[in-house]
Length: 219
Image (tube, rainbow, N blue to C red; front, side, top):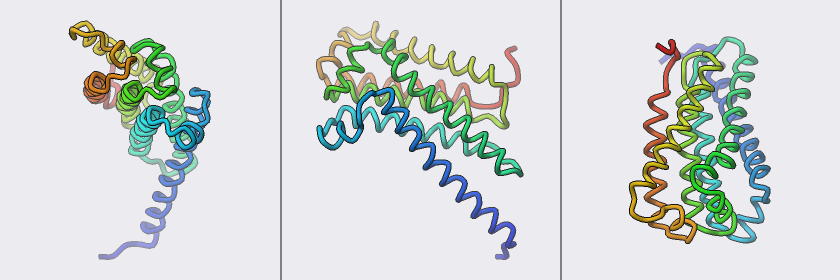
């Protein structure tokens, strides 16, 4: 099968661009997460062997990768500088939003004590916080997956709407169970955490799919 030299060159440029963008964005994501966590990840993961922080970080990185995939899968442009600016802008915006959602949104949805206990070694809390990051990543990736640059205000609207829906569904679930989910998670109940985590990711999948696509109007 014949391949033109121009096509091979463009393929290599694409691979190089995607690889470089992914590495840079993941590095930025790690720094942003560490800034909001206010804890050195090396100390938490290596010196203290904190599995809860490890699960939280794993969920965050997985969510960031979902955002990166959505951004990189968008339509390319002839100008690689334009692609770089768009990927950097949307990628960093998604990272910062996820960090803010984890620090404030998940604290509101779960409880500030759950986020705090994840940092101090509560594995159940780490599972729940990590799942919250994955669910948020699914929503952000859905919003960022449209064709073209789209309407920024519309993207922000659906991002906010999706996050509110996620929080609403999880709060409703808490009222439907006969036990206190947050209290059980704060007490280290892994089974309760896995159930809650599964719900958050499932709802994130549904909302992420609902907000995927090109914005054509509010009607």
